[in-house]
Length: 265
Ligand code: ADP
Ligand code: MG
Figure: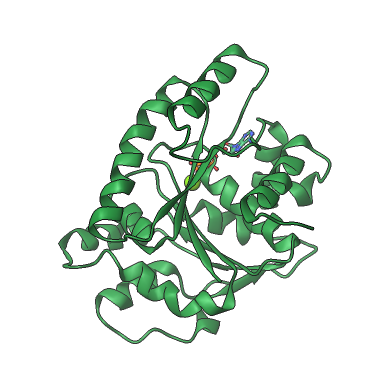
């Protein structure tokens, strides 16, 4: 059964895009059928997936999620999947471009628009085990669309003081969406990213978050360490596992894919 997971946090720079990029790669390595959807107007995920690579054919993009959303708002028939789903390595993706920010403005005026993204993704569910949606750092209409489409939400946080304040706003929004629009949405859990676990601040904040959400929300055992190798891999348009398979961050993303999927080997 397909699971649509939205990766969200209204804070920027907390590894949402990096986690979608690396989780897509590691889940696909484990044998799952994965579709990554870039739903952030900044399009960092798309940029990392279409960077020229001498070892691999990099797809040329024609149709993006921004185009599909515009068609959906105009109630036009969508093109066939082959025109907007692209492949990189072992997983598929739907790219994006800056026009998604125009879509965002239009969504504010559009009635009943919350389910438009779900309507685009639902027909694809039979082809995938996981659909991962990368979102923009806000709780605006695009994130609401992405949460309204999701079976679950994965929250990435960098364990420091301000992160936990934002977390309460995010969980409130998700619970509102659950009550008003998408009753099936569940919390997938919290993933700590960019961790410097040896520092006291990180130890204390992660212990506080675990305590605050004990019983209510899963906090993943795996956390992703801060590593310059992750930034380097992103810059080359590679997942950390491709760039440096033995790095701590690479191994952590593989461990995280197993924990999230319940992979039994
Ligand atoms: P978001 O999508 O939440 O805005 P990004 O995934 O774009 O966050 O990450 C923000 C920045 O942090 C990027 O420059 C990225 O390369 C870097 N980064 C992400 N994860 C790590 C990590 N584990 N260690 C070091 N740098 C990281
Ligand atoms: Mg991002």
